[in-house]
Amino acid sequence: MHKPVAGHGRIASAAGAVEAGGDTHLAGRTVDALEGLSGVHPGERRAHAKGVCCRAVFTPSGLAAGITTAAHLCEKGREIEAFVRFSGSSSDPSLPDLLSPGKGLAVRFGPPGSDSSVLTAVTIPVFFAKTPESFLDLIKEANRLKGGGIGAVAAAAELAAHFPEARHSLMHIGKLLPPASYATCRYYAIHVFNLIDGAGNRRPVKFEWMPELGVETLPMAEFRSLPEDYLELDVAARMKEGPIRFRLNIVLGREEDPMDDPTLPWPDDRDRIDAGMLDVTDVIDDPDADGLAMDPTATGPGIEPSDDPILRFRSPVYGESWRRRRLGE
Ligand code: HEM
Image (cartoon, rainbow, N blue to C red):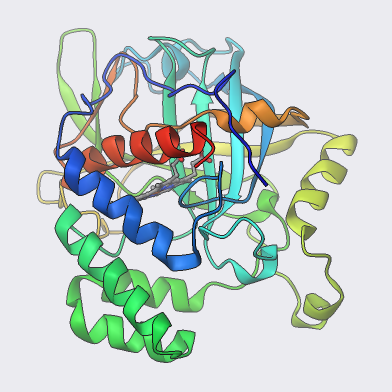
């Protein structure tokens, strides 16, 4: 189905967004490669194609006030309007929820504009490529393996053998079980960002969302009886009873931690700040809402993207994916 989104679709850019200059040619080739995974689905995202958009409110705890000027993180108790999109990681929008391994949570704090801040997160803590070039090589290899009819487990083993940097991430993907709900996943923003305080001091951090209900996966006995859209149906049903809640943790990095390599984790014992609570309140029943693109480098004032080349490359890639789907391609 054609789904041009020219009307309300817009790139969620903000102060701090990396200029989309970068390698736009490489970005185009990367989107081509992503299209190879499940074909072109006109009007849809080239990754995380299936999703549900919701209204939300974020209430900062104020505990991060000393280390950032970002309004949504430091003004204690102020209710910040937010836009949320839950998604499955596949590039195929018709893939049943059960079959798409990783899940995503994209949040825009504040109304669209230069002060809004985007945070995208997934259910694995590390990524499978450390440079745009290796990401492209890996997706091309995945396409080649798929063309050869090889199963998912064997394909993952092949990829791990050829791309050692992907091993950690592939191990996490291999262990993922279908979640009971989007509301019971822990989501990691993976990359390092710098928080900037009023004096201009920078502090490297990572972000993660902790589900208020705890992490819960689906009992295997339920797999067969599930509707294809079970996660979307569940979100709508839950919110009739009350908001779905996530706590935002800011993980404080130390000097010795890797700062620009998303394939490497930080040690678990890093200090964390409880930065506030996200209340997801209701589904946005408007197809145009889905037209929005969440540029992960659009961080707004008080936060800046690190030099992680994958993080910076995501900006032109998301721009290209958005451009194509906006034209109904
Ligand atoms: C080179 C690395 C990556 C590439 C090429 C890539 C590519 C894409 C593309 C093409 C989209 C659709 C964009 C749109 O049309 O709006 C997308 C969406 C998304 N990606 Fe990535 N991605 C990368 C890394 C990551 C990482 C590291 C994360 C996790 C932190 C992530 C999380 C997401 C999420 C949550 C969405 C859905 C956003 C929404 O709901 O609008 N991606 N990605």
